[in-house]
Length: 462
Image (tube, rainbow, N blue to C red):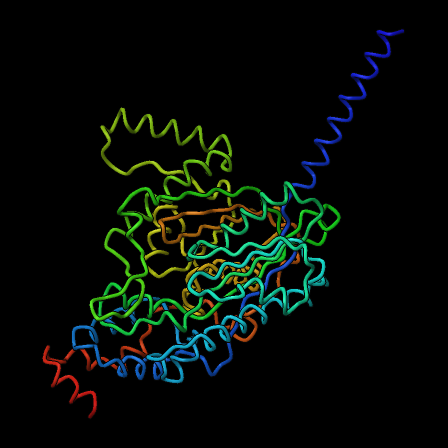
């Protein structure tokens, strides 16, 4: 009898352990219920005319800088309808202030959150986790405190304020929430990602620091996530995997993208010549972890076999074998950091123009919106009705540090067709060319300028 009772007790303990493990695993899922991207008002558009006036206002520039800016603007992949900060549009970029900076952040954060709560039927009082990722501004009380006060959230909401994470911040925040979901069961989480441009517009003449002015534009996004299994049928996507890599231990990687002051005391972002190498290494190291977990076994075996034969027969000469990324993913949300970034990622991943179209068009229409950029890319895919249930999406984000943070999503429903911020322009996309030819047509005379500042100024005034 005692033996029977002991066996029964062990059996019940085993069943309890299995059931508990099942519940924990079920509640550790991470579902995306909705997301909203920010679209500024039309009076903040940086068209050719506005950009020209902005450049000519900078008295620190010479003919060499004008030629550099013209060449870069034409080839950057940026269109005529991106949005800039209010002080730049108003011509007061020389005197940024805190109130204007916070007003810019409020417009983005509250504008996207209002829509997020309304469209998903979730009350701010139901939010258990709040993550804000806005790198280049700080306030007291904090930015998350502004959100909590605006929406009168609960006093036990778990708050995280990620600063300095740069263009990779939203994926970092998703990974953070995913880990928090393992502790906080049946929870809702909100992530808000953006950048503050008003206090960070560069006004000097260093080439390495002028490029961000051309690429970075006003934007942001808010995400609603949950681990509630009861919300699975309402979710847009399910997180399958997230992998993070930080190469900051390398001095070259660490210094490849930094916020510094130039010799004249102007603050801005400096992009060094080591940036491409730092980015390539970060992507490679991240993929070493991510791809074996996501690509099918047959593709991994094929790649290993071909690589081995290549090393033996060709003596390491000829085209290097590569993995077929499309064997594991149907869609690619690549950070729209610039045309050069997109081109390099396309080559290294073996993607065609159809695969790169969403990223190129997001850059063309909205510019580099930092950590929010990949969500504008996803929104383009939705607007074009590309996404089908069961599809896998690889999100690739790069950021200062240098970091590469990627995540894999599975589409949970066929009806992912919200046009979001693309409503008024999706019919015009894709464009045949992303070159800004109107800028070249209007300012081609810059290439004729002599390298004497006085002659340059005289011609501009005339």
